[in-house]
Image 1 (cartoon, one colour):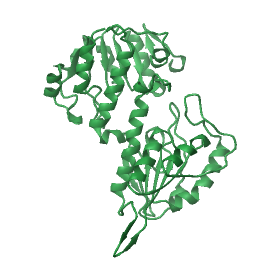
Image 2 (cartoon, helix red, strand yellow):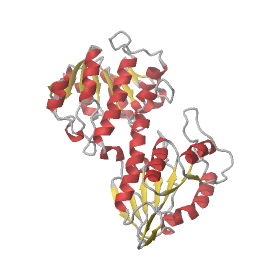
Image 3 (tube, one colour):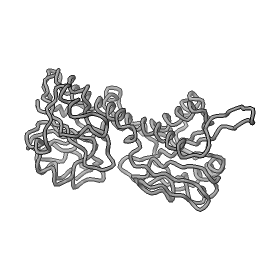
Image 4 (cartoon, one colour):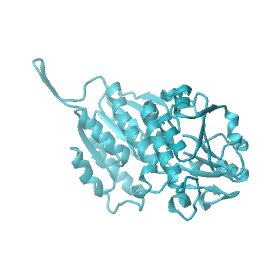
Length: 371
């Protein structure tokens, strides 16, 4: 495989591009002919001329029929898959648990499709881990968005006019996004508390200068991939009770509890929201998969009767498209380079990364969960 096609994104929310100009040269150096759909990088600040100078060819959408390897940020429309060349390799975020029809279409077309969401949480795969790279940016943006929404400043200030107390942030979920949210809020001078069902993350929270909120939920833990295990209904109720007082005292709550392939757990109830102060802000980072916060709506801002602002942004990382594209593009390059030991892309289904990330191959759906 030598011909790479970088698609424009059709989703109106999307501002990222899968490959940036600086990585075109790196791909060319290992033997690839890079072809970029006209305008693909415009929203991220990369012009067609930037790609030409880097050595890429600018093409139209029909080039997909000729490409050996197609890469994008988001999943394609089902009807577009019929335009892909049989035997081609497709790589993007595919949302495979919720897109079984799309996965079936890839198999029917004879396209090998790989999903970035399925990349394993292993040391060797870290440099390809799109979920981690993008979640880190989303955690950062969540804090900035909250700061821009608040009517007060975050840090403590001692002035001749009096002392201004620091605002209080509460981060729920201490994964990649939560850790970055903690770090960003601390840098901006806020007081930060955090909670996670995995007691093992307490040390990480404290290392960033935040306070870890302890709630006795009984036996909890994390999966082999490092994700929090799903709680029982009884544990969720205990968690809500333990968090209610912290929520009432918080100026900002950021919830990050996404469960890949499953509906997000409802953590913050309407009653808890009603107990918060007027002017407080909640950022629900799991709103696209059902939401952690009762009352949050995808890509809408909701103002509750008691004056709390609930923001449900489904693509926070798209607010910083140049940086998000830089990180995504690096993940793409590292995936391709990993399977190009001799300069030619060679799908190796014995490799644990390929074995898990590829969801279709040779006309078949390779993962029983997506059939």
